[in-house]
Length: 95
Image (cartoon, helix red, strand yellow):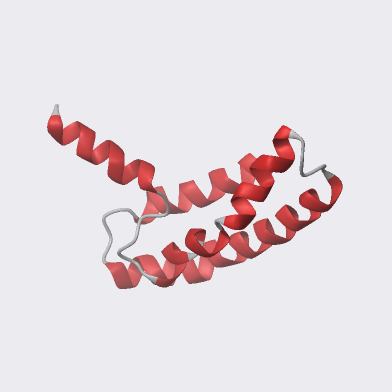
């Protein structure tokens, strides 16, 4: 369930990649922000059900601890949702 939620966010990012920052921010606020909010609710629910000492519990806690950083892409259209795209772009240029 969590991975499907994240996949929906990546699909939006694919659609707006290369667009002007203002456009990206608008689409993120209208399409991504509701998904992120729902993901946050889901995350809290899962954390209350899973032992924080289990492997899944540790992963969920990690995500929760990074939450503010994860939200940065909603506020700035110049920011990528994650570093994977940036890191992959750098490695492509060095080859």
